[in-house]
Amino acid sequence: QKEVEQNSGPLSVPEGAIASLNCTYSDRGSQSFFWYRQYSGKSPELIMFIYSNGDKEDGRFTAQLNKASQYVSLLIRDSQPSDSATYLCAVSRAGDYKLSFGAGTTVTVRA
Amino acid sequence: NAGVTQTPKFQVLKTGQSMTLQCAQDMNHNSMYWYRQDPGMGLRLIYYSASEGTTDKGEVPNGYNVSRLNKREFSLRLESAAPSQTSVYFCASSDADGPNQPQHFGDGTRLSIL
Image (cartoon, rainbow over all chains, first blue to last red; front, side, top):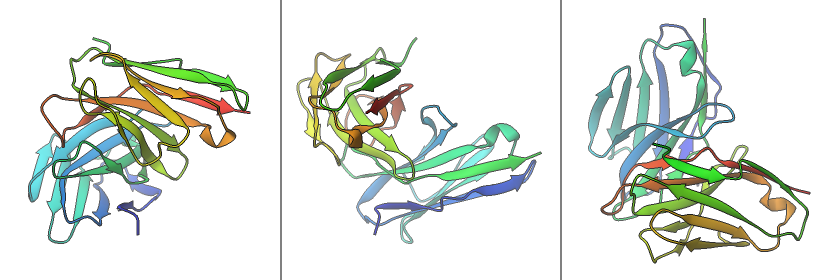
């Protein structure tokens, strides 16, 4: 079992819709959770991080964390063509410097 | 403010050659990291340096060495390149005090080994 799992996609959503991305993790000792966006041929860019159960909102992005069920999700509201990218979920254990990444979900927003 | 700067951006090597990838950050971050990214496999940690003077192995350290030259610079060396090391290499840094911090990435080095 991979430590961090994501559906590879592609996830295709119409412009203006909500894109919902899911990420599950296997280590119950995980403490910190990160979402990165990566455009093709570019480097990962931090979108959000979340440490506590519940929702965290930043603009059009909402991260949701459920430690009991071991998943973290990312919602993108009012999706725009510029949101078309691969989204990487990353997790770290309590007290750890290292991040474990999922393989990413590719999102395509169609106009 | 350049953030995390990696050099070179592209490199082609022959099997058995050696080279050093350079990384420098100007954000006064304590921790620095080297990852490789291969299609369908996400980012995998090669080595990291939690603070100046320390280095530790990550998930895939074989065939690599690192040097934390000072607080700003963290280099990755391939002593004898192999085709399996063809990849995109990313350097990252993270904020100060302690673990579990967000990491910020450089633009990457695209390395091909023939």
